[in-house]
Amino acid sequence: MKLINAYKQKIRQNCIDSRTGKTDRVEYWQDTLFCGTMEIMIPLSLIAVIPGVIFSFTSKVPLLAILDLLAFLWLWLVGFARLPSVNTRKFLFVFCLYYVASYMLLYLGINGPGLLFLFAAAIFALLILPVSYAWWWSCINLSACLIFALVLHWDLAPFAVVNEIPVSEWMVVSSNLVFLSFTFSFLLPKLMNGLSGSMEKQRLMQMDLYDKNSNLEQYASIISHDLQTPLRTISGFLNLLEKKYGNSLDDKGKEYIHFAVDGSAHLQHIITGLLDFSRAGKYDAGKFEEFSLREVAGQVIQLLKGQLEEKAGEVRCESELMLFSNRSAFMQVLHNLVGNAIKYSRKDVPPRISISVQDGIADWTIKVEDNGIGIEEEYFEKIFIIFQRLHSRMEYEGTGIGLAIVKRIIEKLNGRIRVESTPGAGSSFYFTIPKQND
Ligand code: ADP
Image (cartoon, rainbow, N blue to C red; front, top):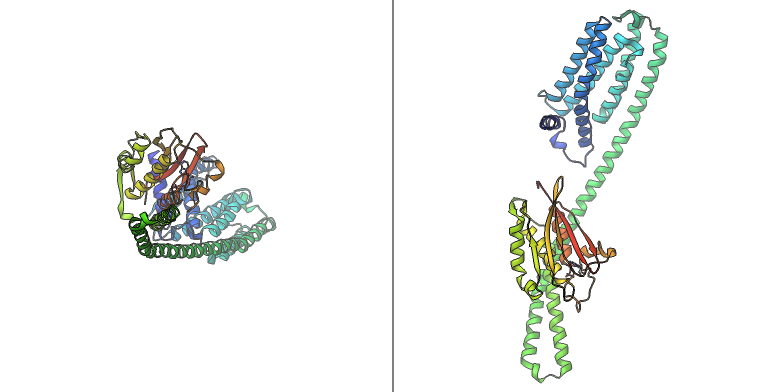
């Protein structure tokens, strides 16, 4: 297994140009196709060499075995030798196919796989090499067919049986190959250009979206920052008003002041929430570190100690998992989820919260499970949208920003989040953290 992985890694390293290593470029997919072809073809050609060698000895043409072995060696060099560029490898690969086609034609004529190899060479070349060379391959095929017609005409093939093929028969068969080669030289570049164009469009749209997003983030950050100062003044004066003149006001007046104080406190929460939201996910990649899930859960429990004691709640985390991610971002995620699990507990049922881990192929899935009020299935997506709440503030205090922040952080950390829940029984939030975070 280790050997196979090392083999694949070496081929990948040699056959995919790291400079075009972006999935939004056609060149990347051309390299990937070439890499996949090499990965399969090297071991397969080794298997194909065996019947070739046997045939060459039974039909007393040892040269055929040597030519077969040379083709294998050629392929091996394309995959593993030190060569100046990936394109050089691709050209050598295509010429290796032409080489195989030539000796197959010379030794086996129309009955051998020579014609198939000619066609395959053109198709591979069209798929993996720049489209600017598209007409080369059909022209090479045309020339190869003409040269072979001359070989037949002058009886130059090393094998007598091959020389017996009438030139007219060869012309009929090979003209089909030439026709198909030209058709594909015309069609495949159209496909490649179309793909390249739509990928480029998508890339530009993504960049535009990124720009707009960061402008919006900046905007939200500035607005919420600027709103904080006048809001603090309003709250301060409202509190003063209540303290100083509270006694001289009638019940209605006291109630109005209470509403105003409460409203400004709520607005304050929204503004801080918005600020947190605009900052969420803006992390320094250098701040990625290894940390223990249990340790971070312990810190979150400490921060939420008051709420937990108030409801006689309990949080359990027995995992020994070590994560590699942004510790403070991860802590905020856990803090929001556990905080919600305590807040949305059922009346007279003490919250029981458990944090556990599931092992995936490329990532860890962290599960935060509670025995709270639960969520109806139709709201599973909605709750992650900013300002979307399922309850009034009279029922449960909140701003509807917490889960939006969680989702944003998780996505910035290259993960995903989802919820499963049974109303009246509890909810489970699942989020993933990549095992390797680049
Ligand atoms: P907030 O708690 O401030 O309302 P959130 O974004 O954290 O905002 O949550 C959005 C909504 O999702 C909440 O209003 C609540 O209805 C629902 N919710 C979140 N967590 C839970 C949970 N553990 N159990 C039940 N409902 C939840």
